[in-house]
Image 1 (cartoon, each protein chain N blue to C red):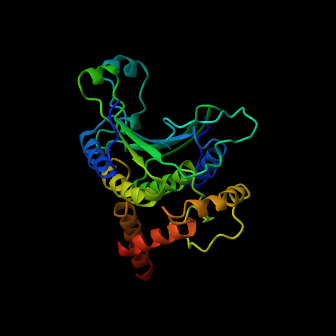
Image 2: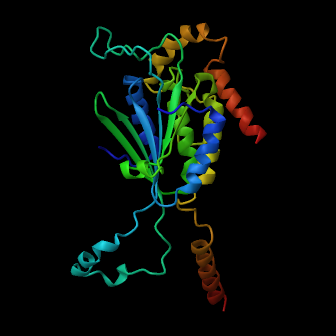
Length: 166
Length: 132
């Protein structure tokens, strides 16, 4: 069960997994508070001599954690990423939104640079080798389903407008 | 199984869930909506039969507080779900991000104050010392 070091890395790996198994892969976001120390296990902690510095009574409580997990039950592939930084939440949800597109059968967004929030929509030069075939494959479909929703370019344009309003 | 909520109700309930949870975990899941849909077997002739769909489909978002059997008996278990259509994804995730950003308050804040101020103070002291 690999835990990836960075969010962009998790995104690329997850999108690869989603491309292979779009209808069985699921993404779980776990927001969890740290475990409260078990009051019954006091005797144990006494037996192991605690370090002098390891008795912080005035320290703030440990932060909650956010764990992203992509799991495909048919192949058993699991990808994880964990963070405890509040500053990353917005970016991570944005990534979830991006990964939801292949899940829904839409062509993926073309922006190359994942880490940047304000990536220009024009940055579509040579998308990753894996992304391109799907885009091509879905092009004719996009025409068929155009009555309901805008094609990929239009969708990203919408996004930009919304941001501008806020 | 409980019924799916519409997106707005889901956000309301999700906010409540975040507020009521103080020590355990919250699980949020997203997956392609395949219930009732025929999913081709991966072992069939085409390599990835589900890679290209004739039409965009919807995804299902679930939220739960991960209570166990005991919690379920005590009525503490919360399970929410909603279905997001393909053309509503962008709007949904924008709202989703807002809810999560404002409710996931247990995470580490970016510490703008202490460390930086200390550094600044140090630099000032050093600078003053040199001048004198």
